[in-house]
Length: 243
Image 1 (tube, rainbow, N blue to C red):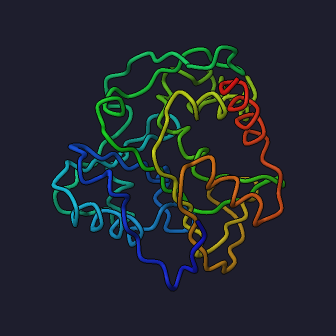
Image 2 (cartoon, rainbow, N blue to C red; image 1 turned 90 degrees about the vertical axis):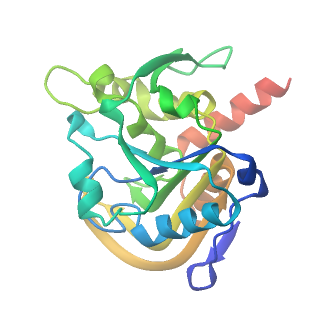
């Protein structure tokens, strides 16, 4: 669904009322404000809506390239919410999870934080970003949930080994392996990334997209008129799973 940002009032799905633990994945790898990262206002709206229907534990989980601590980043971004636990991917216990696709695109298993598996409802919320003619939306936001310590090369500390496999293939695999319940693309502004992921041009867009992550990312891509390869791969795999 697409909302005008000025009219947007977030309401969590009714199923959240039965959740005991809700995990929110913001985009917060850099200590720079929205639209580089998820805004604290958006997170506050999500948290307030959860609190309205549930006393569930609420967790924020993010990771960074090279394992840079997230706590100072959370503080710089104003992520200070009562009764919300802020977690760092690098401090989690990791478990190896099988990709459920019969024929994975690139990655048959992923190392993921075990706290994801013990959460009842999963939300990914990301700013609207474009780069090199494609986009970074709610599914791309899941990449930093993977421990960079498991996927970096010897020279740098990010997820280079995954990029070397073809990042669109990896994202398609990740979508099925980590089935997040809700995707939100915060599109009050559109951030066009330049060479560095934290540098780019900003323009007003005044939209919020919300729904199942694949559907949301498809809706954003269609609205922008851009091709996002991992969405086509996911569509193909969905058809094969239904056969």
